[in-house]
Length: 246
Image 1 (cartoon, helix red, strand yellow):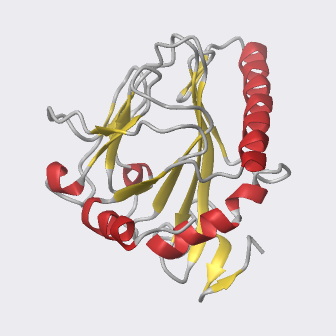
Image 2 (cartoon, rainbow, N blue to C red):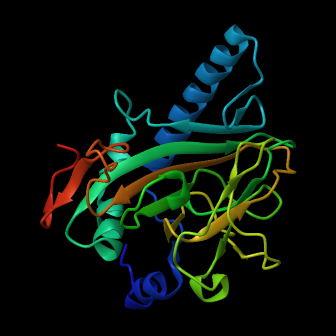
């Protein structure tokens, strides 16, 4: 899976690039299976609590199922050769797993997600990290794919001020008219973008699930001002050497 020099240049200039049909079939099948197991478990949690929404999660509509890789098979993909090449091309000789989550939109009622930058959710100054938006299904505008706003059209690569939407609990950071560039790719593709790239997604209007897996990697451990880790800092590549989370 060669990442071209033009793709690397696009990442530096505009904040993202797209890799089409690069996920090995065995990894794709595994992530779909694990995703289904976690959705069922989350539905059981909400039912037991008598709730239809917990934070950003809305039962049957939208799920953000985060940081469940320990004790699952997800590490097979998180620390795979595909992800190592992406990290080397974007972050260089040091890459740490920072966060990972499934983002799922339910059939016919999967809700939208507002314009935001991932860095806005960190809450403290940090070096930008990368998000790898891995499609477990074919994605298009009808099922709520992600739209990316290139740096050149956003007008900045810095973190914008964000405000919380009181209904959805989303952070919102862009209110302009530019619709962004939709990512329309088959299952097993990866949109790689910086944590400072503005992005949004629309409703899923189809009768099928729209499932995405998002491992995120930082070039160094990300910490709060008091020195505590913000999330994970599992070493993947350290000084050019593969560590694979160990």
